[in-house]
Length: 292
Length: 258
Image (cartoon, rainbow over all chains, first blue to last red; front, side):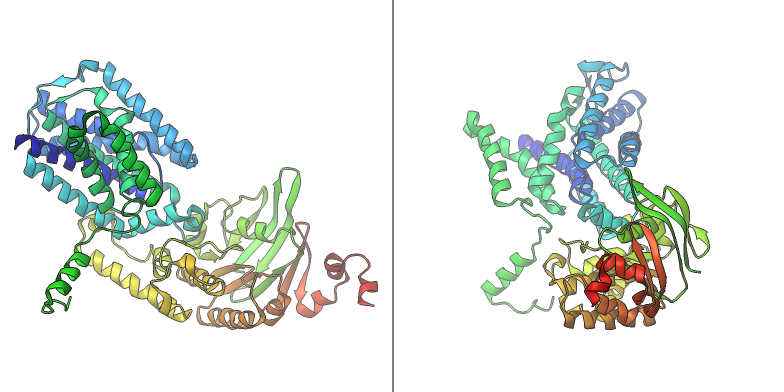
């Protein structure tokens, strides 16, 4: 049972980070190959605060999110101000991710490449699920607000967005900051579940896992990436049965998604129980609740 | 003067796209900007809206210099435009296209939006009904939920104008709105432009090759050729100007006209 709960917690944590990246990639149209760095900064900040300074978990999470956000300005302001084309920007984030990892490997307080062991286990199932729910709720409010409208305008056509008075630079930076904050929260939760972190956990592999979940889950969707992130954490666990074939199956699934659903599983749509409910109602012939 | 361009010049490489260009537009005027292909008409629009920065000269809107402002701030001052090759948010619905243009209308801040305060939600709903009003005005309300990229050409033009009007501009720049339209559609467009000009108290600058449209709605014309102003004046003055006839028809126009 502990194993199943562990997988669910890891899924939730990954879903939080993926939601963050979905705001930036799925709704603002910017690709990042370095978002694991924001998770790393959140994880280390929170872990150091609870481990060495006895700060409460909630404040440690908030501090982790704040440090991640602050670092997003360091990479975001120069690259976005220079209007780097999206592929060049992605390369810049790749470099940023590596730079953060190297930094963590060489600082004293992070104990370098050996990692930071003995972190208190403060993330349990309720904490992870509540955090995911709050994240999804905030992200939904964001994309439904005028800040989200601006992001979508930038994603669809940056020139047309400028011509309806959208400050493209500020919109991208806001989205980046929000996504970094959520990745920071995810990192903080991860550290306090695994009880051990090291820089090697936050490499390009983790960044790629995030962007894969966003793209496979669907551009312009929140629920799609959340489901995809959870699925990509759980799937390898199920596929343990197939042992050596699991990476092949994993890769095959991605290819199939890209071929048959180029916009992602839930591209431009949200997962909703309403169609299911409607079907159920028709099947059972109950029309009492059809008013909604 | 609502808009003034003074000695504006813009070079691309060695080519003078716009050369010491002067333009003065009064409030509530409709000015036609005409000239052969490549004369620099769209460049003038790009200079006014801040997409390009002039190499020299100045652009003044309501008396204030705007030639150093980034495009989104120029739009904020009250200048809206449409594009020669329509630029809609194709993947979004017709309604959303107008809704996004109303992003400055709500007054809520970032945190009340994130927490989802009732006032923020109310303002979002108000924006949607406001967007619907613009669609109704343009005869697009029946297609509000349709994908903008799937609109037929004439309606896509209308939607682009609706989106520009949603910015509540003082000055509207229309870049070849009649391109690709048949005569019936042009008559509709003419009535539409006349109507929004009146109802929204707009000042309009119109770039257009279709002379039937230009002559129907622009009392005053400015003629550009090779980036410089050839002449300007009333329709009568421009039509009889030998330099204009030469630019459009070539040196031997007298022989062509017979």
